[in-house]
Length: 487
Image (tube, rainbow, N blue to C red; front, top):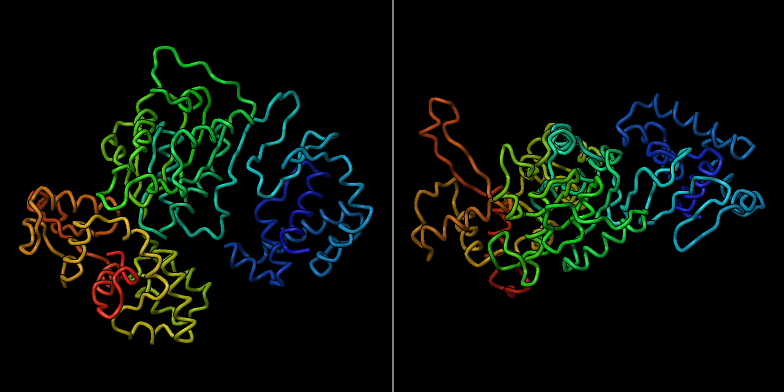
């Protein structure tokens, strides 16, 4: 039995006997035990004290011992579970479970075991209930690993959704910054405030009619009858909106940038996908208690137009981690922690970028951070292929402006169009706005005090990684253009 099979079996056994699934920390303890980790290692990875992990583990072994009727401990846990799997004991536990499709239902129990990869994970019924209180369809939500501290950002998101009736929310930022991770953490913290929680990815660019059908099927499978249209409202031929009005729903759409066109300024939809814009506007403008969360590399155009202090539309540009990013470097085994801040600054605290570069440092520099940082220019390695994705989406004018910014040694003002660009003033400003919506340029404000507010100036630059990416992909004459660069 592999690790996942053992965890599944343990969860089923506990559920059948107690009506409760293993919680996240219990799963972490079991997984760590199966991987031969010490409690101190499990505690580090879980951001808990070793004493707390030991207490939780002791209670867990006691629970499993009661379930199996024999002693279970850290040393014999796997053996005991494998004995159950291949004995009559598992049949005795399992005989009352009927499988229909991909979902298990207990004939003599109001609860059902948790099924890996099942698109629905429902709260159990309580006495007197006729349908589940909470219906979750999270099969497309990535499995959450270690979550790095985003306390303030999470508080902002929860405040907007739970207390300010935000109906349309965008979380945007450059690839690797952690949009999906914070959204998954948000779901775990607020899911019990909603009737339905649904996560869908737009990575394959589904037409809206296909997406609507998929989401409405979730409502149907969750036992929700087809709602009648709200009196006096117009849903613009979008039946999904009627469900969002009838039920309190948390709907997350990931990879929203994939319904936009490549080769154009940010926010332009692919031909035939303009109805996504209609959906987003209607979600913002109609009265309901649901929330649609959009995760994207670039700010959706509707967000930019509709967002306002007193509007039910919000956006959060996710920036890099600060000192918390040191946890990533610690996990990767990098020493010289006095130099971590320099590496974090160079890679702008981007969690995925730092994981990639830390692996490179281990592979090529034997973990020597000093040796890596002494290299000039900045080494991108595997990070370069990751950055091809957002850069492939740029328009020609955006590529031109990015090249200009990369050539400048200091932050620049956009008070006038650079002489070597064939862009009008209006075109140039549109390009700069588009690059900002893609989180590709950094703004630096000069004169932050109230006294200087009217005289302050804004300067623009590229971060070290993006600057090196642009320089590298324009400076390889011996490599075919299409093989070396999205430009």
